[in-house]
Length: 273
Length: 273
DNA sequence: TCGATTCATGCACGTTTATGCACGATTGGG
DNA sequence: CCCAATCGTGCATAAACGTGCATGAATCGA
Image (tube, rainbow over all chains, first blue to last red; front, side, top):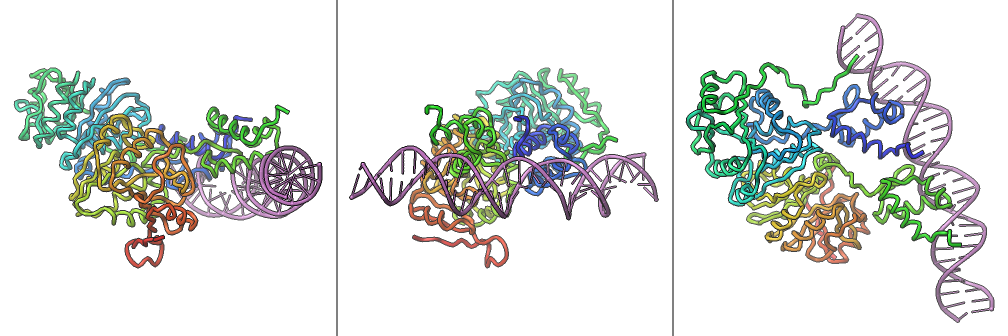
């Protein structure tokens, strides 16, 4: 009977399920593979011992994505950024080619992308690339060059040359300041240059911006507020700012508020009774 | 009798079955070739020893194209890799330009680099780049291009073009298999091509290799064992393997015993012929 | 041509492995 | 606090395993 699975194949499939679904339930696996739950539990125990998953009551979860200390910025107001991210990922549609700029909010967007989304993502940020590597459906393109460690991405001459060749359907810009008059701005000269370049070649531009950046201007201009720009803001953004952006034609989207508790890995396991 | 198969023919057919079906069962093969299961088991054992397949209970699987993503591999035997890393970082000296290849052991090396080391590190692996971003003394250069998610790095045409321009002082290669005869080998064709390219342009080459990879050969050759190569191995590496490497002129270094009474931080031991 | 040697193969034996079942302990929601 | 689901462990069993040995065919040297 070739329908029987070898032990290794079963474990391999479990790992695949973990990657794509973000979780597995012992009972489901037992039914699917037609073995007893004891066997599945043994598999999961061994995989957990090998560091391939985390055992939990009822099943298993993927190993905690190293949480690699990166930016203290990413640790800052994570639930606000997660809310912005949830509101933003909806604009990334199947089949699109999307540029994901550097920035902690964009990192949250990367993490919020559905595991099975099929799209091409281009980024100049290693941390975002690393996060996206967990999503099996994506084609990933990395823009290289000298890494600017304050920006956390490649924004130099080499990166700009690559960026100039790129015409994404959507450009998701990271932003250091956003003001109705000054437009979107950045702290670093080369970063601003890079953003301007990639945004100018994109069919549409999106920026998810936390409220603390509204009404502020960083030293270097990126792009002005115009009808090709879509802004995703928090629910507590000042009405005056929203009105000013809208007056210049930008499409403004508010992220749903509330969403108080963000579940653990973003992949909660639910035991239904 | 033309229906009888020579040993070579049988093995060849088994390999074909492995490629097409992704697995073979000892019992099926025995019935199909009209030989005893013992014979099939012997065949599979020999093929596994030659690195042509992976032996599992009940049959065999193709050689692990399925070793998992880079972040998953990094979770495997982390203390062994950390020991190798401690023994390896000593060869990265102040002022050097170093290429850090993809691989979970190399990720450990990246993490083990002293925070204040002043050097230029080039990598094609986002995860390694992200780890190195925490070390303020380093200049970082990222090699971009399409990301291969099984390798966890950029190894395609674009990356190879960039790599061809690079002449690092030291190339730290990731390795999928290491054998005195077959040399260093890799699972993926383009990855092997990339490694060969970058190694050939380097003044010296280093590879830190866990014991489980010794004596195995992956499908694609990278470089042979020669005097320009320095191998960092674990303390429990088979003496025969060490001798075979040394006999071909490679400099072999043993990482200090991980547990117990290592006098200092993994003080390496030079082996001389 | 003949004996020695090598080698692939099959068989017998004891060992290991994967799996399922039974039982008592643990967990977590209500 | 209770109850049901889930868990870990010990045990039994059948399949798969490795090893040692015998057989027969092919190869080699003289």
